Image 1 (cartoon, helix red, strand yellow):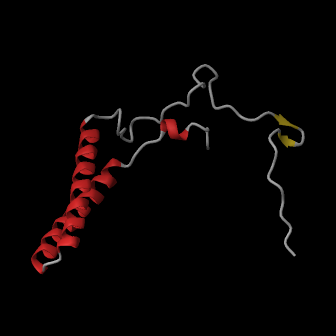
Image 2: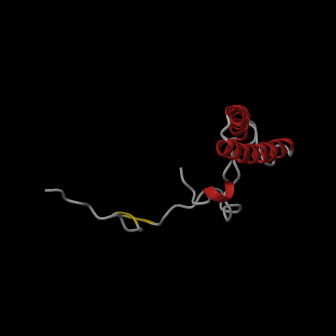
Image 3: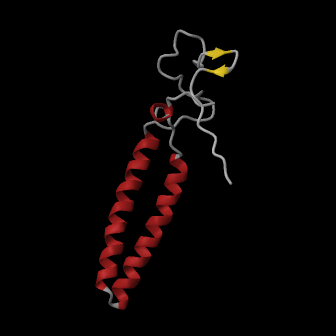
Length: 112
């Protein structure tokens, strides 16, 4: 169910990002070394720049993982409650009438 507060309460898959960064680190080190040995300095520099970016990303991921459950909740931590719903006891729904929700529906397209 969408609550409308997803960007504020989104969670990141840091462990997946960690392994993808390690994979990128391995390939950029390999690419930098191979292109330097083959004599392609342009490609070696490009892989070296990517190596720097991947290393910074990996450091940020490790930092966030070490900060604990505030940044990477486990399965035992429930999702955050959307802002503004602390006193209502549940998520807000659009006003309903006999004909359905009060918000307008998208137009129906008719194809020939």
